Amino acid sequence: MTIKSINPLNNKILKEFQENTSDEVTATINKAENVYQVWKEKSYSERKDILLRFANKLRENQESLAKL
Image 1 (cartoon, rainbow, N blue to C red):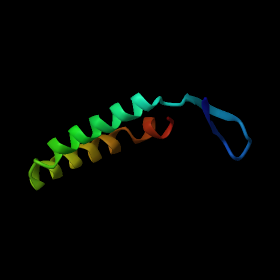
Image 2: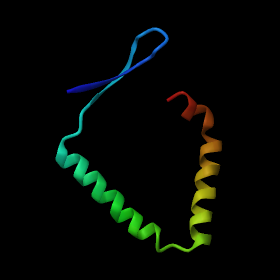
Image 3: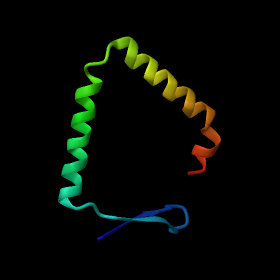
Image 4: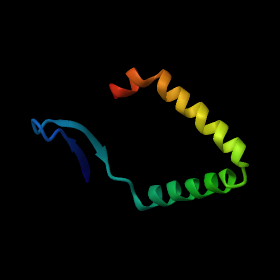
């Protein structure tokens, strides 16, 4: 099944996506769980630094990201 992203203003299809299989969903959930296990072991200071770097990258690239 195809999932469509539709602009509500003009009903134009913006993008079409293929639905994920059950195995793909399970694999994605398992990856997220593995990443979470690593993340929760990081100190508050490490997490803060990572999030601040990420926020800076978002600000640096806000124009190109807005066009996505």
